[in-house]
Image (tube, rainbow, N blue to C red):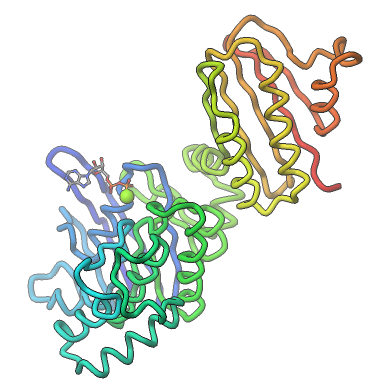
Length: 361
Ligand code: ADP
Ligand code: MG
């Protein structure tokens, strides 16, 4: 359905897309992941000609998009794009947001457009809000309206550019659920996202973008569990973990614990494990003496079912979990009792403690 060959995009001297080639079949769901600034948005914007590519070719259903003789506006209508920032018309009601395109651009009758709009609002769970205005809606509701508005144009391909990045964490799942439903209905979709669990569950293939190219592509299993290239591996590890940096003793423990709970929830870890993570973090920080430079990393590997907490702290070599102290120190006992293993090293001037936290078994 979409064939991209040697696509490049330069902004002045800045080469954002070097050489992108890809084939996307009808009904496929592709998630595009990668560090920020690697051209993911630019790639999507080139696909629907919001940006003019510098070089290369794009075919949509075998029609060359960049050929001067191609009716671009017609091809573009085949593609809907959902942005991070919703882009709803603030002065129009929800239903008017959905009907303005079909009436003005597709020449549909008002009644037909209204009926279709109501049907789509039902699909995204917002039929009740047809007469509301965008500023009366939550972020998650606005984004669901934006998706319905795209669908109202009968697109064959949907492009999503970080559709949940601007949302409160509590509203992410309602938007992802709508996208998931569209994928079940066979919609062809390209989704730029930071929601890795979602990408893993929904996608047929993952494109990892870096260095101006699709640096590595594969099934979710290939990319998330067995990435072949170093940069992919480093990225996957980074995004599948949670990082904190503490630079004084006035750190916000509660905010940190809150984020950790969300992380555990996202990975569907048992409540007990979440509790261990939160407690161990508190105890571990409680026995630190130098707070000038502490890094905490919480990660979860699905394969081993392992939750690991790594604490790096600057200072003279000193293992805060010395076993000699164990007898009299309750905090240490608590930590060790909840870990499968504890590994201490002193590397690059840092005390590094790696704790593997006990799971269900
Ligand atoms: P991503 O979506 O992966 O974060 P983008 O595609 O937004 O990356 O941007 C890639 C690079 O291109 C960035 O360095 C960005 O500053 C630059 N860029 C994007 N759009 C423009 C533009 N219109 N003019 C100049 N530079 C741009
Ligand atoms: Mg972007």
